[in-house]
Image 1 (tube, rainbow, N blue to C red):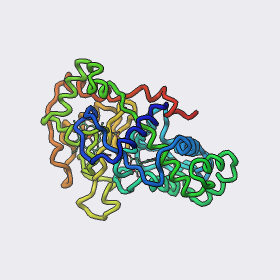
Image 2 (tube, protein in one colour):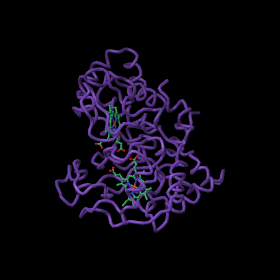
Image 3 (cartoon, rainbow, N blue to C red):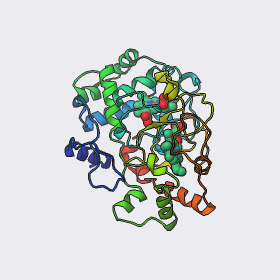
Image 4 (cartoon, rainbow, N blue to C red):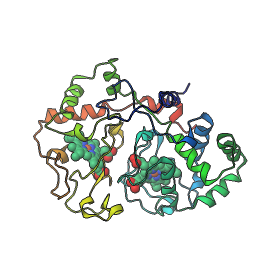
Length: 329
Ligand code: HEC
Ligand code: HEC
């Protein structure tokens, strides 16, 4: 059975275990994924959603698919700071990875979207993404007999905005990966190399505070905080939704799985390397009234910096790149 599907189904059957924050992915019971009652995970829905994810007809110029920005070979992120959408209209934010996205409690970088089903409408309508409209897309896709049949099999109805949003969300909930060297070390299957092991201790130390924001199965507390990137933000983050100045510069704590492969970093892709990220934090960041109190300057030796990077590299699950669940075909 497909690994992702297997894992997802396992969670589904483990069922509605209580919601609790895990200190590490090793703790035996992983949290239950949120799955709406009308969108239980099935193979037919996965296949339909997958077909949609790679379909360029979703964009107004028929040139951009979800996968154009969320590239499977780069853990469903990409290596550009920002990526243009249909008709080459420039993007404004860095493309986040979709690995384990089903475990996220809310979506977009300021966390303003409550479900994966609702998230689908964001790229479809954004003028700098698909610049399209759901009813027109549904009509166009429904004229394709193969997709129409897939939609029927998955949801018992033709291609509609309902089946498009459900199918894409269903597909994304299958993109799960828990087999990085870090996961394996936590399960006691392997030892991390010495540098990564020292990096792990540093990462979860009082000195660096990394682990106070980046913990749990995806190395994120899912808090929405200001991590001191700028004195003046071009993108106001959460303030965009609330209009409240005390939300300026607040973004969702980024998950760190496969982070060694998803440069550049932060909501705008402004930091090019992991070393730049570590330098940002060790400098204590820019002064901003909303900056989280855990962002404080600290000293690191060159060796310690390297150790932190080794730890971040140990969060890569290369198996994902070979697993058919995660591939286009
Ligand atoms: C033009 C590039 C582009 C395309 C096309 C695109 N996305 Fe995205 N995606 C982004 C960017 C940029 C963000 C961050 C948006 C934000 O924070 O406002 C994002 C965010 C997301 C998120 C939220 C991730 C998180 O961590 O909260 C999901 C889920 C997602 N996209 C799924 C999709 C799906 C499904 C499609 C196809 C229907 C799609 N995207 C098409 C660029 C793109
Ligand atoms: C106060 C909470 C907080 C602390 C402490 C913190 N981070 Fe972050 N981290 C964030 C937030 C918030 C973001 C996303 C910022 C954005 O989107 O602009 C982030 C983003 C990142 C990213 C970029 C991920 C990506 O894909 O863009 C990396 C890497 C990272 N942090 C590593 C670390 C390391 C290493 C430490 C310790 C030295 C650390 N963080 C400490 C909150 C924190």
